[in-house]
Amino acid sequence: MVGLSAHAGTGAEALRTTVFAHSHIIRVYSKEPGKPADRKTPFTLPAGSTVITLAELIHKDFIRNLKYTCIWGSAKFDGQRVQKDYVLRDRDIVEYHLK
Image (cartoon, rainbow, N blue to C red; front, top):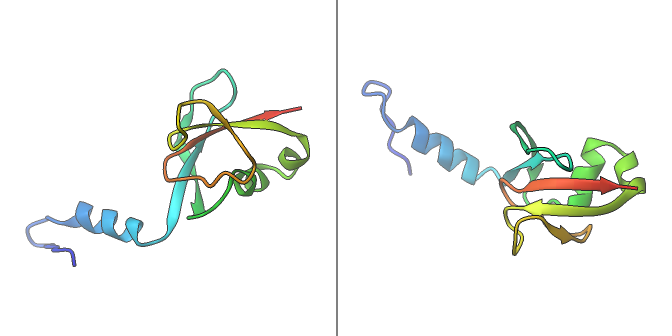
C-alpha cells in the first residue's frame, strides 16, 4: 500500500517506485568499448533476461558475431566478462565485443 495525495502533492514518487518494483522489468544500459555508458536511453527487458536476450534486441548480427560481453553493476567486479546466459539485473551496463 502506498499513500498518495493529489491535493497535497505527496506520494507520487513512492507510487512510481512501487509500480516499477512490481512490474518485473529491468532497465539495462549499453556501452560501446572505450566510451561511457549511454544512461539516457535504457533498454527495458523482462526480469530474468540474459546477455543474449539483449543482444537479440539490439541487432540479430550481435549473436553471430559476439566475441565476449562485459558487465558493470551486478557482476562481482566492474567490467567482468560474463557468459551468454548471464542473467541481467536492473541498471546493469552491458558492453558487447564483436568479432
